[in-house]
Length: 139
Image (tube, rainbow, N blue to C red):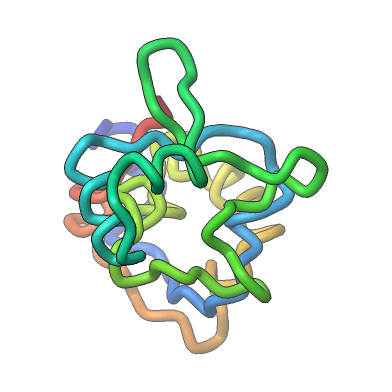
């Protein structure tokens, strides 16, 4: 992956603005690991079984957050704000630094078309080493 990130030239500009656009509007999966399920349930002050029933779905042998059937919004998003920000899963924490989003400058700019935190005028510089640590492949 390192050689494929040569276009990055040391880093990219990104700061989350909290707009919630990355959490809605696109069908897909937010895969959850066992420790993330425990953390989210605890954060929401729920038992694990109640959390799983209310917020997740099983896809094959994996567990994903449910999404609204027409808006594809995350069930943990309320008024465009993540209600579990401090406990959010790795897949969410590492956005937009997913393999497909940083594969090329074109892919990065396409992601920027809906993510206002990319190249935002007040965005922080994220060094390549940090991007490489956070690159997340979709399940």
